[in-house]
Image (cartoon, rainbow, N blue to C red; front, side):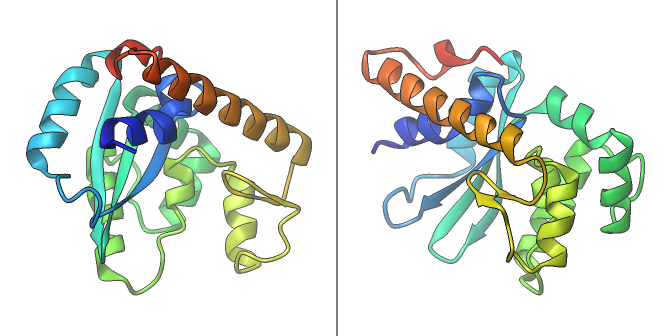
Length: 185
């Protein structure tokens, strides 16, 4: 898969406005071209439509690329439950999103403990993120985009929508639609 095709497929729910953000793991051996120049290119194309790209981690053998709708992420992390969770995780209330993402990125680089607050920045239900931490990733009722501990029916429908969206966006991209033209977020 070409890099842009990978971005379209894995980022489709965010590009379509169904999800606030996606995290894409990009193997370095296949895509050793993920760099500041490429991010500047995609950000200059897509920021006007509200979509942003940021590398959260240049981890061993891969990049973790965060594709997000800035306005939707800001709105989600300002919800009282999200704000409280992030505060408990060490994020000072009132920090700008950009600053919070710098902190999140630094936590990936420290490699002491996985920053589970990532789930909040991806729009996962706070209750599921808390249960994931509580149970160490075990005892989930279902697994899909995230491990679900609460509201299984809603999550199942959400996973179905994301899957259909990915297939549709990949099909359209293969027909010649550009990444930019697919953004309806």
